[in-house]
Length: 283
Image (cartoon, rainbow, N blue to C red):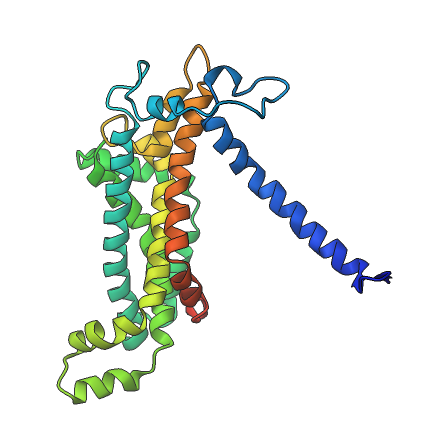
């Protein structure tokens, strides 16, 4: 059946209506958090909701720790922790994961068993791993340190990086490397100068996924740190006090946390699409 005079079927209307409803349900919490972060503290959760108000940056000022009720070093310190940890983990995972994935793809190290073991390692639930990680980090004397969290996140993400990188390198023909080595390149030079540039979209996609995981991760950061190396998602819990939940600064912190992955994805979206559509999941 088609709507008279418009040439649109009821099926198309239902599909587009369902998609629109899904988008509204998905986007509304983000919209609510955004407007709550710029509302004056007294009307953040007023009943009925206040839609017309004078925007303020007071919540952001308090969240960053510069207001009269700031939190010592402020969220800027925790933002820096998240930025450093996520960046170091991403770079180290890409380097180690690319080299390991290349070795498995070209030299068939471990056959199909070892890559499968890496994939199974990623499937382990974090709750199973948190106690061993806590004991190891404590034994190394790296509790509440950026290095301790970097080591934990690197170990958590490395199986994923190796598995994905192996798939990308398997899709690249060996003849390209052989031609480079005939021209005088060593195996390492052919990897750096020829293979890595061809696999760059896939490696960037892997890096972005790892970065977003590290940026958003909560449980390991909460247990392995106390204050010095605390990351931004955990630091947001500081606004849950014994007396009240400071929704204004908390939503402002949420917007800050959310903005980095969104901006990163928008900037590198073409690499993500190219990388994930290049056959990396076939590994």
